[in-house]
Length: 483
Image 1: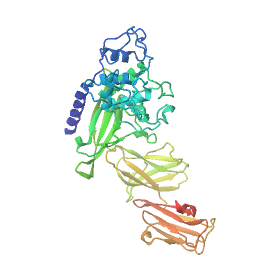
Image 2: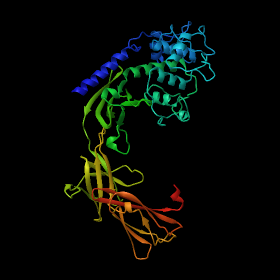
Image 3: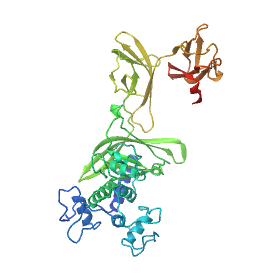
Image 4: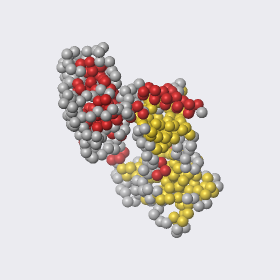
């Protein structure tokens, strides 16, 4: 299959490119320091980096894992890690950095690459300590990770109001690279220790080497959209993510797919054709992540599957005897359709009815007291989605409204002639009682020109699915007319 060959080519290309990056040696010789025991969480990372001469120990045989790192030292580490040229460099022209400054070449090259920046006062601060949050941003830039939008889905309460480094910290945490100083704190402004930095660096390097990148142009598209499934209110759609999608915020034509755990999940991609912005194309994949020799590998299987999907019906709390599913013309599809109680959503008591195909249907709910209520049900297939887009309305074609409890003169009412085909309004004699019958889907305002008190008019919305109509009426007040 052409697409599978294309995906294989992209994966091989990314893998070959990743080999050009400094790699973590699985068989790195254990480098021993008197203050780094094998049971320390940073022991392996320290050993890997010192073996590759990315970071060194001290003459006395110690590593000093709890010591902090300066900005100049961090620049040197990153320059070695990425194998950057530190000889032929452009003078960054900082007040406190000259060619005689230690790590000058490294500072100059990481600044030129946009990995580090100076301060607003023109300094670089080569001897200033690097914080945990700053190191997070440095690694994001060094390995060219796209960032996630911060969603407060971390246990760390001390990054909620973090400004410039918030998304970097959040992204590295979600990718399993960064970790906190406790269960509830990240300590963003605390200087990062040499041991912590070693872990951050080796994890970031490994994750980046496993990351696959896609560009919309490779699909003939001008941009990317994507769909993943994690919805606690739809059990069949609530799957654990095995890959994290990082979309470039400046260019929606670029995404990174990062494996984070073993397993399988669904992924939909879509985009507008490069030469025809009115045409939307989409592709769907089952994405599997496997692990071998401590490395993740991503596999893609393209599919056209559209999976059975629940539609929710707002029901009474009374016992339900039966549910019948029919087409709009009355042809019975299921005499006794299977249903289940859904997880409560927005305070409504609901049942879930499974739909296998797109279309418009009538669901009839029969209660134990023999009362029957009909629902219009609609299911639509959406590009890039595995599940149908479903919704329902209860049949309620006529609403009776009594405005007697409100102050005002409701003897006359006006409605736009252009929307008169949406409802038919009947007043009961000279009373304040009205019958509002839905005719077609739409939205309409009804004004009471003689009322200058509590109620000025009505907002009327008519919903329709096939022949099923649902009318909703809401009076609006004098104060509300300005909103």
